[in-house]
Image 1 (cartoon, rainbow, N blue to C red):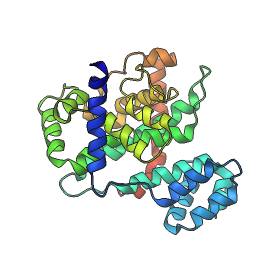
Image 2: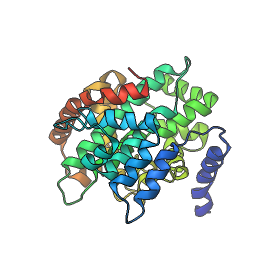
Image 3: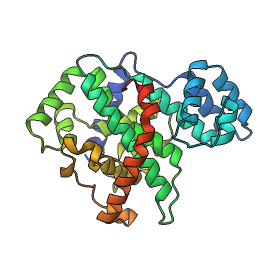
Length: 297
């Protein structure tokens, strides 16, 4: 009985993702880079060559590399140089981030949601990078995949918005009618599963690492057993910091509470959260290039 109860929502999510026509997928260049990075003898030239075959993506990678996001002392003028300066893993995650920002396009009916969604997603991405860079309790997180995870953490909501418009409207109407309602509970009551489960399955379909899929799938309940290598805790904290930052004050963020166990996991108190918020507000000024790629500004 327990097994069937556990797997039923997962099966429904798999069926949902499988039935979506024209489901956005990362471009071939991302798949090629991911493939060569799994090979032990991969070189800077290999990744640079792959990127050079996609001029549009090359331009985006160069723009992001030269933006204040990295704060480089001199301008990078080639993708090969970009790979040498910021590293293979960083370039892969820049390609993923740029790709995701272009996969989902708004129309007049959901334009406001798209803008709010990407602003929060970028805020969480920057918060994830900050937490990864600052964590001092013996656990090491890579800031590059942390940023991509922050950007992707709510991607399940975008699937509902773009491909399940009737259910999306029902969820939004219910949340607007009861601002204190749990978003997860509302989603489960209407869909039978949550945006976290959709995001986990989507990232698995995209063949991203298991740790990324589980981080997204468990970012609202990181204490549950998962294979995120503690990235679920990082994502949960980053999501919380993004929500309570001054950028989201008009959205009732003061009512948001961190998931159970997250503060203790990182050994944080309220003063630490204030410090993280201040860092995020400063870092978020670097988001302009990402916002333009997403068509938000």
